[in-house]
Length: 191
Image (tube, rainbow, N blue to C red; front, side, top):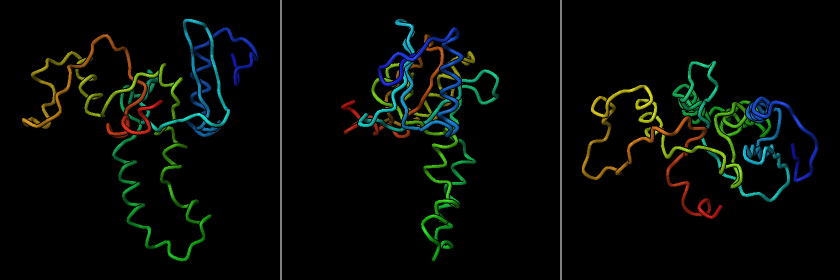
């Protein structure tokens, strides 16, 4: 185990440690700005807390086999509706102090606190499996369930639709999903 490049100790069950520390980051116990990298080949678990690392937000895909929403985004319709309702209620908060508004608002901080969105830096991205869109994640899930391509969802059958490759059956599990496909462009493309 390394913290900011300094060796601090060893652990007998690396996967358990990584899962536990990731859960602590996702529930807000540890800072969301920490970078957690498990290098299986070198048998290292690296934790970076230093400033100056370029990070970008991604949706988290649930990977816990004990949970019913495994291989689904943690971001759900209920969370989306909560954000929409909150946006409509902003006029009722006239005259509130900034602290009161922050206490009553779920918003971006709530998404991070609940582990719906996670920030990854370039080094952590190398260990993540990132799908391009929620639709691609759904197609991959359907392929894993064994549905023939003809029975899979044919949403957006249009001549100008995005040409998508077929889901890769060799992929064991996705860990993250792009918030919007355009986010891989621009400044994010340089990391």
